[in-house]
Every structure is written in C-alpha cells, then in structure tokens.
Length: 242
Image (cartoon, rainbow, N blue to C red; front, side, top):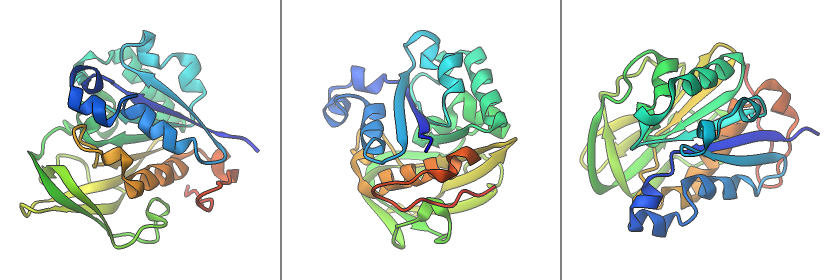
C-alpha cells in the first residue's frame, strides 16, 4: 500500500514575530496541521517554510508530494516567482493543492484562478462564525454535522473576487451578518484545488477538531488517483472523484 505524501507549507512569520501567536502555535501552524495528519495511517507528512532554501519546495520535494497544503499571509510577495511556477506546473500535472485562509492572496492561488483573489471584506473583531455545510454528500464534508461553529474568528465577507467554484461546499455566516464562500473546489489541469477559509493566526483554529477533519478530508479528495487505495485508522477511506 502506497502512502499519500503530503507537504504542509507555511510562511512561518507570525509565530516568530508575535508572542501571542507563538503561544497558540509554539511549533508553527505547519506543525499543528502536520501533527494531526500524522495520526492517520497512510499519510506521510512533511513540512516546508518560506525561509528554507527554495522555500522548502525543491524539485525533489514537489515531485514527491501528492497534496500540498499552503498557508501564507505576511509575505506573499517574498515567494519567488519561479517556485510559484513550479508549484503551478505540478498542480496541472495532478498534484492536489489546499489553500488555507489568507492564502487566498498568495501568488499560487491567484496564478491558478487567474484573478486578484485578495479582494474581499475583512474585519478582525473575534466574532462567532458558523461554517454551513451545503453539500453533505461531498467527500470533504464527510463526518460533519450541519455546520462548524468557531467561537472567535476573523471575518471575511463577500464579495470574494474568485471565479465561480466548480463545487461550493461551505458558506460562512458571521455575527455581523456577512456571508462568505468558505469552501471552494476547482479542477485545474489534472489537479484538484480546495480553498478553505478558517485559520486566522491569533485564534486556535487549527486546534478545532472539525477544521482539522476538513483538512484531512480535503487531502483525500485532492489526492491523485494513485492515492485512492489509502486506508485510515480514524476516518473511513473516501472515494476520490475524477
């Protein structure tokens, strides 16, 4: 049985510059996500960060990655264009990509969607968010109830400048009344792309069990076809769609 190879990429700046963020993620957001994914049989998980040579995304790493998870915020402009192009090429060849939260403004997300995706409403008041599941039959929503509730979160509101998703599976509602397309699936070439909105660095979003469950489900959904034979000790294997 072949392991599904996952790389969790994080710019890893907030955790080193902000004591509050460091207290929530002492080993970085990337390692919080990696620690959860490692609890599944059949996942082989590594991390990469911005300040490593080639941002940790050498040809060897990318060619050995089935699904890449991307978290960025402060340093989108520091990501080298040649690395972005290599990631883009791998997605078109079939590598899965999961873009989290403020990664909506990353070069790789904008390159694959063809628009400036950082355009949206924004407010950081620590409001309650309900992430409503609107496609219960989708593999990424497997094991969830009607919604995920996050007690305190940064607000993102429409209009979100993205192309219409191939599949819209989550819509968020915030206490201020705004809504947001917070779970969007795309196909690009042979690859699958999943954008998942929750994840502001000053709140413990990546300790929330349902948020982590969605990321794990997203990895399975985004995996190339050869990952379809995986089994998990915690969640039943999910059927991968073409």
